[in-house]
Image 1 (cartoon, helix red, strand yellow):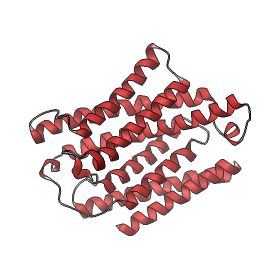
Image 2 (cartoon, helix red, strand yellow):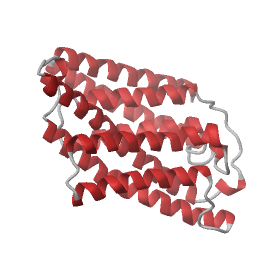
Image 3 (cartoon, helix red, strand yellow):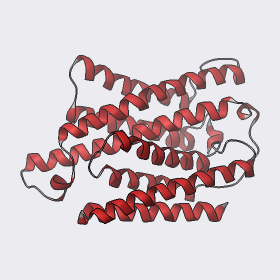
Image 4 (cartoon, one colour):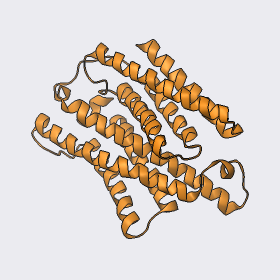
Amino acid sequence: MALLFQITFVAYLVATGTYVLWFAKQQKEARMAARWMLTVAGVLHTLTLLTRYFEVGHTPISNMHEAVSFFAWSMTWGFLIFRWRYRVKNFGTFVSIGISLLMLVAAIASKEVAPLPPAMQSLWLPVHASIAIMANAFLGMGFCGGIMYLLQEREIKSRRFGIFYERLPSLEALDSLNQHCLSIGFPLLTLGIISGSIWAKQAWGTYWQWDPKETWSLITWFIYAALLHFRFTMGWRRRRAAIMSIIGFSSALFTLWGVTYLLGGIHSYAG
């Protein structure tokens, strides 16, 4: 299983390198090669997760290595499916870099197989955890779009048109990308919190305990809820929406990693 994960990691690195080459050279052959390489990496990653499933005997999403690996897998297939409908120039370059960074974290994290705590021996494990991580995947793509927006806006405002101006989409296209990612990620985030509350009731007898991870997931939810509210009531778009998407995803990452390693709590077994 470790060898298959390493091969998958290398495939992602090759896909990312090819996307970066496409971004720099703008050669059609590089774009096609990058797209196919990312697809190959996604297929290999699917096989890796299936192998891990049969090795551990449960959905491989119970520790940091598994969660981040599943995060990268969700972001890969989320992007590949997303691009069938929405074509955003050079979006794959930024997303592939994010995926490779996630795979690096998964590679560093402990791959030790440990027995599940009693609270996690539930059918709610694959339901809640997969929904929550898939939400992060789409919100992560929104984060990438926010970074692209700020880079493009800086080029336009400085009036020194460089590599980003020619290669990034228009500000309108990037703002639409932000909205599309939010329209998928936020409902999934909401379902993740609801399913987690139901699971908590089953496991601990209460829907909410204000555990650090629960609290930070709620903070993240409020950030994105505020973004949606301001978008539709006050016309918050473009730069403000991009910045809010970056802040929201930073909060999501802190919920995943910062809380686990810094604040502890009943969810600390994920470390």
